Image (cartoon, rainbow, N blue to C red):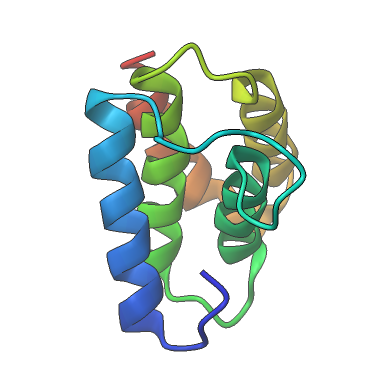
Length: 106
């Protein structure tokens, strides 16, 4: 997720969304560099980025929403609060509307 290539970021968002939709992420949360929290932080960083395209932001938002669907996700409340904070900014209104459709599945 730390790649600068938007195609790779988009593919990573899609893969995380597909896995998160049907099952919990197969990652054990410990102090490693790869954890569920770090994945959520990376997805939210894409949404907040000025360089990301609208399509990439939508995929990152959908991935966050699907993470909450496939698991009793510990960071679901954190994701929702982050989405609400993003919706306060005018430039993220479209993203917030699309996240509402994603979170209706929860």
